[in-house]
Amino acid sequence: MKILVINGPNLNMLGIREPDIYGSDTYEGLCRLISEHAEKIGVETEIFQSNHEGCIVDKIQEAINKTDGIVINPAAYTHTSVAILDALKAVNIPAVEVHISDVSQREDFRQISFVRSYCKKTIAGHGFLGYLEAIDYLVKTAGE
Ligand code: DQA
Image 1 (cartoon, rainbow, N blue to C red):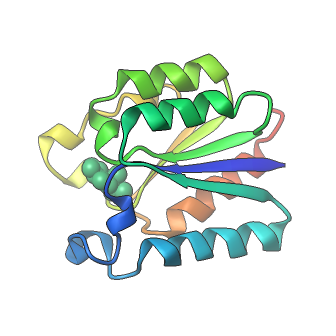
Image 2 (cartoon, rainbow, N blue to C red; image 1 turned 120 degrees about the vertical axis):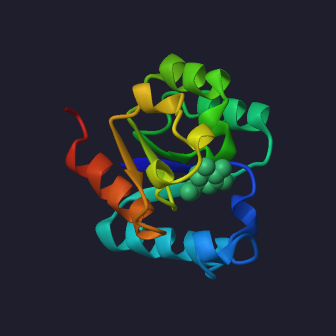
């Protein structure tokens, strides 16, 4: 099974950006955590990060027929991007939405998620562990 993990804008700044909200662990630490977990459970992962909406759309399109599941934290694009929602719908690959912070307890503008309507599940506020839960969920529900 192959899972693509996509991270949107400013997530490469983890460890530096707003540590009171996102913690002090780095993006490299997140990638390591995901890779180690995936290896342990026998799942192949590719981890991708971009600050650009079109690059995220391109990456989702490229996943067609190559990927069994997508874990996506679209970051700020969660709240604005119809293009990312449409790309997920186009490839029709099972996806889980992840947020490090609990967006439901934050500003009003973070209450909208365009990708949520497509994703099989949303995990928010579980920190980096949310990515591992998302991978486990995709493995558990594969083929359903
Ligand atoms: C985030 C929440 C978003 O509102 C924000 O724009 C991010 C990160 C999260 O992981 O908690 O960049 O997706």
